[in-house]
Length: 76
Image 1 (cartoon, rainbow, N blue to C red):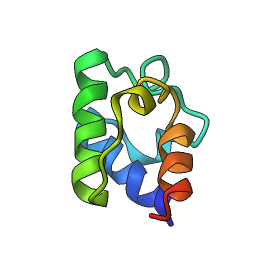
Image 2: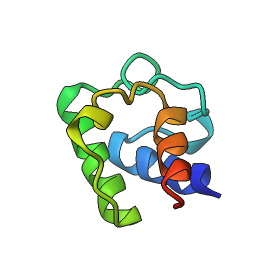
Image 3: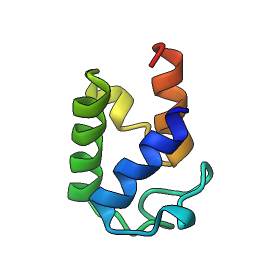
Image 4: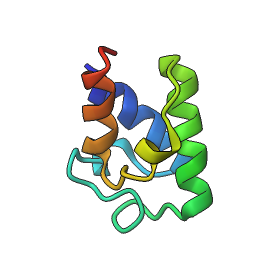
C-alpha cells in the first residue's frame, strides 16, 4: 500500500516514529517539517516512486494524505 511506503519515507526524512504518522497528519504542524524538510521529503518521494511532482502540485501538499492521493491518482 502506498501509505505504508510514504509513512516509512516520512519517518526516515523527518526522524519521527512511524506510528505517529497518520493519513490526516499535517506535514509541518503535526510532524514538525520546515520548508526545507518539506522540499527534501518531496524529492525523496519522487526518487523512490520514480515520479516528478510539479512545483504547483508540490505546493498543494500539506498533509500525508495529499502525497498518498497524488501518487494513487497517477497510478503508483
